[in-house]
Length: 90
Image (cartoon, rainbow, N blue to C red; front, side, top):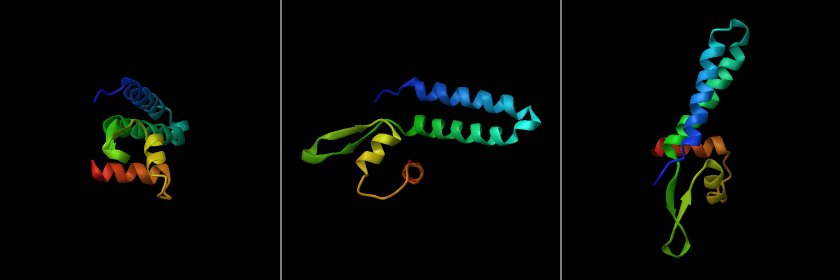
Protein backbone atom coordinates (compact mmCIF):
# COMPACT_ATOMS: atom_id res chain seq x y z
CA UNK A 1 0.00 0.00 0.00
CA UNK A 2 1.48 3.33 -1.00
CA UNK A 3 2.03 6.12 1.47
CA UNK A 4 1.48 9.79 0.82
CA UNK A 5 4.53 11.92 1.46
CA UNK A 6 2.31 14.81 2.60
CA UNK A 7 2.23 13.53 6.17
CA UNK A 8 5.99 12.92 6.21
CA UNK A 9 6.68 16.37 4.77
CA UNK A 10 4.39 17.91 7.41
CA UNK A 11 6.27 16.04 10.14
CA UNK A 12 9.65 17.15 8.79
CA UNK A 13 8.43 20.75 8.58
CA UNK A 14 7.17 20.64 12.19
CA UNK A 15 10.47 19.12 13.29
CA UNK A 16 12.41 21.90 11.54
CA UNK A 17 10.25 24.52 13.27
CA UNK A 18 10.83 22.75 16.59
CA UNK A 19 14.60 22.74 16.03
CA UNK A 20 14.49 26.44 15.15
CA UNK A 21 12.38 27.36 18.19
CA UNK A 22 14.63 25.34 20.49
CA UNK A 23 17.34 27.93 19.86
CA UNK A 24 15.03 30.71 21.09
CA UNK A 25 14.74 30.57 24.88
CA UNK A 26 11.58 32.68 24.89
CA UNK A 27 9.56 30.03 23.06
CA UNK A 28 9.97 26.88 25.15
CA UNK A 29 6.21 26.27 25.13
CA UNK A 30 6.13 26.35 21.32
CA UNK A 31 9.14 24.04 21.16
CA UNK A 32 7.17 21.47 23.13
CA UNK A 33 4.03 22.04 21.04
CA UNK A 34 5.82 21.64 17.70
CA UNK A 35 7.67 18.55 18.98
CA UNK A 36 4.33 17.01 19.96
CA UNK A 37 2.73 17.73 16.59
CA UNK A 38 5.80 16.53 14.69
CA UNK A 39 5.66 13.26 16.62
CA UNK A 40 1.95 12.84 15.80
CA UNK A 41 2.71 13.30 12.11
CA UNK A 42 5.66 10.85 12.18
CA UNK A 43 3.54 8.23 13.96
CA UNK A 44 0.64 8.75 11.56
CA UNK A 45 3.00 8.46 8.59
CA UNK A 46 4.31 5.15 9.92
CA UNK A 47 0.89 3.64 10.74
CA UNK A 48 -1.35 4.80 7.88
CA UNK A 49 -2.67 3.59 5.50
CA UNK A 50 -3.80 0.09 6.47
CA UNK A 51 -6.77 -2.14 5.71
CA UNK A 52 -9.41 -3.51 8.07
CA UNK A 53 -12.13 -6.09 7.61
CA UNK A 54 -15.49 -4.69 6.57
CA UNK A 55 -18.99 -6.06 6.11
CA UNK A 56 -19.26 -8.78 3.49
CA UNK A 57 -15.63 -9.83 3.67
CA UNK A 58 -14.39 -6.75 1.83
CA UNK A 59 -11.61 -4.61 3.20
CA UNK A 60 -11.76 -0.93 4.03
CA UNK A 61 -8.71 1.29 3.60
CA UNK A 62 -7.98 3.44 6.65
CA UNK A 63 -5.90 6.45 5.60
CA UNK A 64 -6.02 8.67 8.68
CA UNK A 65 -6.97 8.86 12.32
CA UNK A 66 -10.23 10.47 11.19
CA UNK A 67 -11.03 7.39 9.08
CA UNK A 68 -10.12 5.11 11.98
CA UNK A 69 -12.26 7.13 14.39
CA UNK A 70 -15.27 6.74 12.08
CA UNK A 71 -14.51 3.01 11.70
CA UNK A 72 -14.35 2.63 15.49
CA UNK A 73 -17.37 4.86 16.16
CA UNK A 74 -18.80 2.24 18.54
CA UNK A 75 -15.90 2.94 20.92
CA UNK A 76 -16.14 6.15 22.88
CA UNK A 77 -12.45 7.00 22.74
CA UNK A 78 -10.77 10.23 21.71
CA UNK A 79 -8.63 10.30 18.58
CA UNK A 80 -5.55 10.49 20.80
CA UNK A 81 -6.64 7.34 22.66
CA UNK A 82 -7.34 5.55 19.37
CA UNK A 83 -3.93 6.56 18.04
CA UNK A 84 -2.29 5.34 21.25
CA UNK A 85 -4.04 1.97 20.75
CA UNK A 86 -2.70 1.79 17.19
CA UNK A 87 0.82 2.61 18.39
CA UNK A 88 0.63 -0.29 20.86
CA UNK A 89 -0.52 -2.65 18.08
CA UNK A 90 2.13 -1.56 15.60
